[in-house]
Length: 343
Image 1: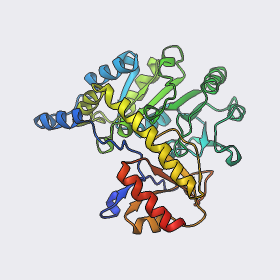
Image 2: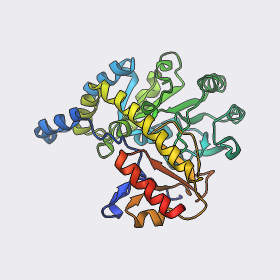
Image 3: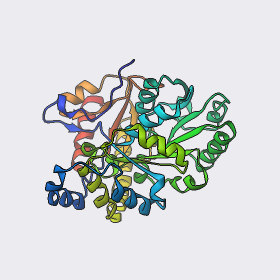
Image 4: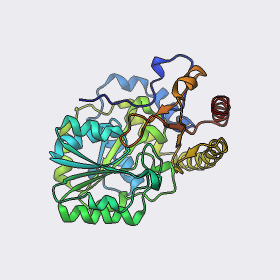
């Protein structure tokens, strides 16, 4: 099994500013901080294995029934469960993509079919993907927006993918882990009338609680959801994570403020990168992918900045890099370091 690497490894480096993990630059919501501080004594007990209060809160926020919600230890926990339960012989992914899909599929022995996004089309997912959805494909992974490109998927294309999946009897995992940073339409409402659809969301990104590991899956297929619930550990979602999720969902203004800040900061960061002559993919999330022909990871690390090399993504090479949108001061520091190296 090949090695999968992710961003966010701040533990291998001292005094580092992390641009490799795409977390909310506004930081953890104040409501979450206060809730965790007030409930330390509760942490002595086992967590609620059904995450009932959190599931209800998610259902209210997303317009779902609690029975359609499965709380997980981050989106990756959900992907592992899906791969285990679906027992798919073949699964289709659009590459480059989050490596967690393939990591989960490899563990389950599923054959992975890769649709390589075209560099000449700036890695946009197009209708060419539909041709890859052959009769022998029973599981499909797509992300809106995509990681690492940050590009969103056309609504009509997602509908076509769902229609095609229904015809061939395939399940579609639509990863919306970064959608709250964008103006893209969530398809969570389609769950009710589209049982083959599984929405995946991660709260670690939008609420900056990566260390707590929290996400959820939404699906209206009750039998499949029952299998997913049984596939994980009984106490997969810790008590602090459950409390944090409930508290975070109580602050709708936080998400709006985050989206507004990220939109403005991302546009500014993209302009600075392009001013240096770099090719930048026009992502819509809280990160940007750009190309530079020489080694940047090491030189940036020497300057105390951890960026994400995209060389281990299928369909990309070591000339591609991804950086998160962070605070104004941190973004300025990144641009200054890049100018010193690139100009």
